[in-house]
Amino acid sequence: MEKISVIRLNRDGPQGTGLTFWGHLENENVIEGNPTETGHNYFTDVTGQLTAGVWECTPCTSRIDSYPVDEFCIILSGTVVVTDGDGHAETFKPGDSFVIPKGLKCTWHMPETTRKYYVIFDSKTAEA
Image 1 (cartoon, helix red, strand yellow):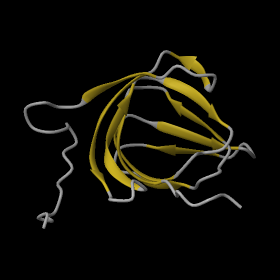
Image 2 (spheres, one colour; image 1 turned 90 degrees about the vertical axis):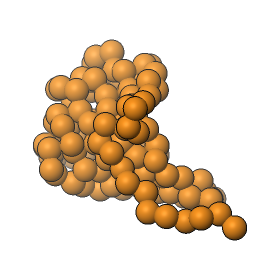
Image 3 (cartoon, helix red, strand yellow; image 1 turned 135 degrees about the horizontal axis):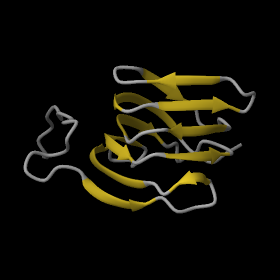
Image 4 (tube, helix red, strand yellow; image 1 turned 180 degrees about the horizontal axis):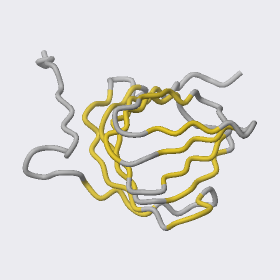
């Protein structure tokens, strides 16, 4: 039987290795910037639906037509401005937390390099 224990999330990634280079975000949704992502996924449940970790990205703006997952975020450094499809903007800074519901149409703008903790639920059930 596998031992189950509490998992500490370190904002700088695992001690000794830090955050891992995840690549350059290159897709049709990036409308400004040349974003580079780093991070560390600390946890994935046995179903692959729930993940948690730390993520960092260089400045950029992305258009998201339908947010693909439910995500809870805590901003560790930097700034995120999320503007919904109706034009309502919310600004999040270090210490702020928020939830992005699956399906939200929004613009995600980071005027500076931003780091966050994330908890993502990615439902594997069939869409209605």
